[in-house]
Image (cartoon, one colour):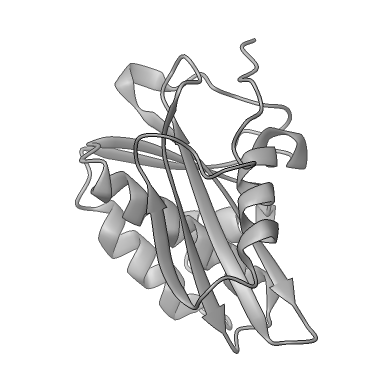
Length: 164
């Protein structure tokens, strides 16, 4: 299991999907975000799903991983690497989660089977700054899903890639 800092290195043409979630406990709104970059760190696309009523942080982090797969499908990517800063979610996706968000994990596993390869890794908070910004800044947008293909959302996803 990967841990630590930013990783724009993707094996064999995979696309890195950095994911994160944000919740407003006052309003019951939540956002699950994914930002896609290629192996050089170049922006490929981003998406955010804004919901109402999901207040469990780990459930939203799992939904963010599912959003990463949805974005990969939108981009017609065959090899994907989903990075989350929530180690429990990654462990549950890799294992047999039967907990509060087990149904989301089952959906993730079913969707992951449609890719030539898929990998779920844990990376620290520092590596998903763009996904974090997108989730936080989108939480009060209209409910539903928004996607950016050619250029990132204004004032979001502007950080430079870090290549190790």
